[in-house]
Length: 371
Image (cartoon, rainbow, N blue to C red; front, top):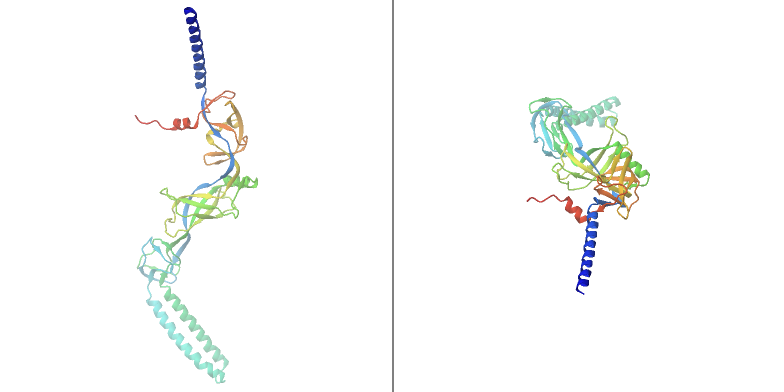
């Protein structure tokens, strides 16, 4: 009985060790499978915003010119300051125009007196029609001369035609300026224009997708817009794309566009470079995959897909466009597939791989902590 008991115990130990060895072999075989991360392919509606380099400009850049010939007496604004519509910018010498005004007044008074004298006499047939017409013509001419003299005198006060930021003076006080001399500029900054360019191929790609019914554009054709300023902050307030040209610039191959933004607080300055985001296009039932999932070769583009048993196969795909850091797929995927996003180099068609769980992917992508 003693030997029989020992024999049974030895047999059990042998079987246990064999089972452990098999399990270790299976575990070792499992860990030898190349680990990969996968991306679940989905078909869904996705906004397709566009980002462009842009430059701000005043909605009106107005030239401030002298309207009479005179010497500049004073500059009444600080260069670069914000000025209001009707604010006086320059004072021109008035003496000669005041004298002409007085002369025109005297001529007008005499002509008016003569006209009042002749008019009742003509009604009594005491003077001829020729004398009456001459008196009336002299009166009307004197009135027009008085009005012109008043206008020229008023032009000695050069005012801003719009509200906006002033520019530097072109003539300093003491200089003689002639009629139509350019004195300065005023840039109207409310509202503010944001000018940018769209690459012609990108514009055509969107138009083609819209024609296929795969891209939904704003109903009225007006896109919303947001701005990122030079310091990296987002501008507080949305704008609207009001103009997209219908022709391509032959020298640059781009399409000119413009947005309008309210600028009551003056945060956007003329000439400032900004980033503009055009919003409104929506991709319908779009399949978008990360660019790192796609393998490009001379034969074309493809992805590595996994079946239900995690076996790898190569699937050719056709790319429509680049949307941010993803590719818009035209054909090859229908949604619901699993494709490899990391570990493509070690994966082989027809072989099995080990799909890393999300928490393991996260741990793998985290930088090592300093010791």
